[in-house]
Image (cartoon, rainbow, N blue to C red; front, side):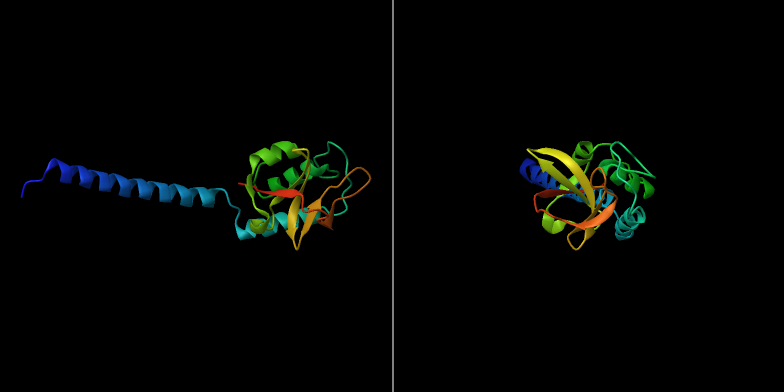
Length: 155
């Protein structure tokens, strides 16, 4: 039975749509796996963060004997093989942002004022963070004192 141009065009279109679906599905699966830390890595982030409890805050310090907030987060993530930029603002730009309801252990927590990030910590579960707070303080785990934060997932 001879094929008409219309039936051939429909078959080609169907094959193209199926192929596009397969390609998109594999890209989504690869992207979500590539930008998510494993459960083990998340726990490791929190463990490494806790290992520096009591370390003094010093502006501009990147560890391991003193930290500022972004130096601390960068140092912690380097221990698990993830690279972060140096400043909290650049770290905010480098992560995939997630909703509060979707936050997980090891996500970064960003504090901002007038749309400018000024502080970063590491989500430790139960509404707490590990962070290097400010001059005169030390790395500590604290309860989040505000809901006015955003969360970012390191890729």
